[in-house]
Amino acid sequence: MFNTIMLVFQIIFALLGLYQLFLTCFGWHRKKEDVSHPPQKTFALLVAAHNEEQVVGALIENLLKLKYPRELFDIFVICDNCTDGTVDIVNSYDGVYACVRNNKSQRGKGFAVEWMLKELWKMPKSYDGVAIFDADNLVATDFLQYMNNDLINGHRVIQGYLDTKNPNDSWISSANAINYWFCNRLWQLPRTNLRLANFLGGTGMCFDAALLKEMGWGATSLVEDLEFTVRCIQRGIYPKFNFEAKVFDEKPITFQASARQRLRWMQGHFDVTRKYMLPLLWQGIKDRSWTKIDAALYVFNAYNYLAGFFIAAIIWGDVLLFGGNNVESVYNLLPIWLSVPYMAYIIIQIPLSMYMAKVPWKLYLRIPTFLLFTLSWWPITVHAFFTQNNKTWSHTQHTRVIRLEDVQSKQL
Image (spheres, rainbow, N blue to C red):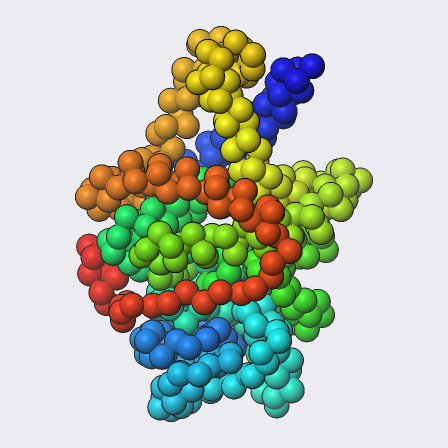
């Protein structure tokens, strides 16, 4: 009986994996985004900052150099519960607004953004779009040109291309960079090509201001980006991915910092899955909307990781302790003509996505440590599952200043 139950679970999660693998094939082709409209839309650029004196200045200088009419955008830095010199640094730049928030009981980016939007609506000046960044980001100078174009074309929620500004700092930061290249090309782009909903990544996001006023932010979980994505999809508003609008995010360089960050993400992911997955799936079935069903399956990914860990632990435990005589693996049931190409494509996905992203060849040497990084998701996911009610937000420390010129020079 146990073996039968295990086999059923393996088949279910193998089918989910096969579905995602099938989707990646639609990321091989990319149609380049164009800019067909002159600058028209006005933007409020919101920068979420908590004790970011080390990096916020570089981002502000970067935003002030955007190739977009300066009169059409304003910069607001949300100085959220700051105890360092962040406010003073922001105030040192003309025309940049330091918006100070102090609320020790409601900490985290979701609460900070919700507060800032309420403050924004009180201001006499109105905006067509709202873009949100993290203080450690760097933004391609043509970012607002693409957002302007997408808003004019009727898109109401847009996610830019997330890249890493420090891929060479450590094996951890390079693993995050590889993960971004993979997700952009083989998770996000396929959904764009198939006209499914894309998913917000927490930064480099742009919203139609009228939509934010109508919906409210309302996303205060540890993964506010995923939560807001689901709320949009439930209303039939499908976020769009703009492959050309690049934002460079700083990633942790130590395993401890990365594990803490990923634990927070997975805790939030389980929380969002518990609240939204089944209602979204049922809504997709009732509406006969594959977009909503696909989104529900995406939200379920936290449990895919969890199930993958336990299934692998049971199978390998059986192999090591009993010679593999008690638990049947679903892969043993596949004919060799199917299993070999299947496993081969799984293996080449990572170098394929890196090749299509045109990354420097030296980063291919980081693939073995990326696989180790991937395996480390399993214990983090298990820990997150049993601590998912912990909603304590944690801050990622920064070690040095990187400017857009530094990032672009390393890409040449």
